[in-house]
Image 1 (cartoon, rainbow, N blue to C red):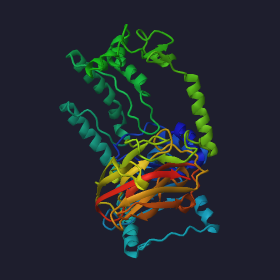
Image 2 (cartoon, helix red, strand yellow):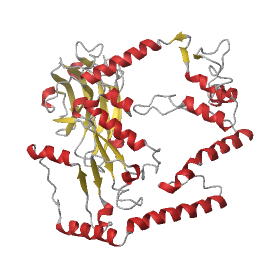
Image 3 (tube, rainbow, N blue to C red):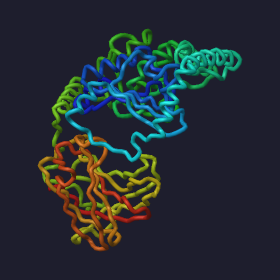
Image 4 (cartoon, one colour):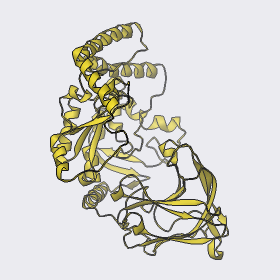
Amino acid sequence: MERIIKYEGPGSVAAILMEGESGSSGCIKYPVGYWKGVRSIADKYGILLISDEVMSGFGRTGKWFGVDNHDVVPDIICFAKGITCGYIPLGGMIIKEELINHFNEKPLLLGLTYSAHAVACAAGVEVLKIYEDENLLENAAKMGTYMTQQVEKLKEKHPSIGDFRTTGPAMETYRAWLPRTSANVMTMWRAGVLVAAGTDAPYPGVFQGEGLHRELELLVESGLTPVEALRSATSVPARTFGLTDRGRITAGLRADLVLVNGDPTTDILATRDIAGVWKRGVMIDRAGYVAELAKARADVAAGTFPVPPGSESGDVSDFNTGEPTTRFGSGWVVTTDQLAGGKSVAAIKVVTGGANGTSGALEITGTLDAGLPYGWSGVMFTPGQTAMAPVNLSSKKELRFFARGEEGRSYAIMMFARSKGPMPVIQRFATSADWKEVVLPIASFQGLDARDLMGIAFVASGTPGVFQLAIDEVRLR
């Protein structure tokens, strides 16, 4: 977490939001001291710490709030549900006094139609009284202990129960989960099942292979020899997935090599002391890569981003090559509200007959689903060398392109910028059956100056249904 904060820049992080106790996010038990560690990081960088107690509050863990199990005081607590025992909708926040005092001189103008609804608040007051008068929190704690004892008995009778998670008394049971997993791995391995060490999915902030060293260590702890564990990460997956050109060190195969200090065939922890890396026989400049990362972090912290190579003219695409290529950036990709749970679809292809008699244009077709009030479907251009990487295009003042589509249909340009947060800023344009040039000042996107531009999307939004949009001669000027 601290590494990501340093990378993004503490000034770009408004708050850290966590559940007091993990619920439907996986019921993952926080390690002992984890909440205190997060509190320390938040204090170190001046970041607010928020505890989401909608699920874990009001006795669900035997205490008023889940975070109370960790002896930590957050800056803000969000709550709902249990405040009225679910009989009437009511939610709210508990905020530290010093934060409240900040708004004595700087009012925060917010309003909800049903704020401080008398009936809901009356129910909340009465429910809190019942919690206290009938000692329901104490009873919840007792029931938690009883449930733990009973599930332990069931686990002894049923090997299929490998793990269960609750607060407090069940912590040792949770720790017993790893030995069961290790035993299962060895049982499968002895039965001839191939064991392949995996790698991490490339989620933001997680680099592929980052957890592999620990996985190799766990395989050895489970009973594999260091040599067998090393095979699980090299020759076994290569053979399993038909990658015949790699996975072994022998003449004629790809020279993807890692040189370490020590002997990992006797001490698996030696894989962590890396001396050199080669890809296809070319040594990776690891020191240079670390220096680049340090510079990137410094640029992020200072709010400065690189000018993308090839962007000098501002020309993005004219599609005359017959392919959806770009002069700079990482290209065009389909973007839809499926990212937010929607069902819109889109497809792109280069078609003949561009604007101004040119040979090609980009056609975007699809269906805008009615399931989301803010749905979208279309295509996105990312100006950085990797997807959504911020770049400095502040020298460009306008977005220009030609568009053709259904007569009078409304489309939208969504611009993404680091300074605007995760949500795009939007400007709309209408199409006609003939090619028409669209010119949009970048400043019209809520004062955007493109110094930290991450993406530009051309999308159908608003009216659901089938759409067909063509764009050509996309330029930043």
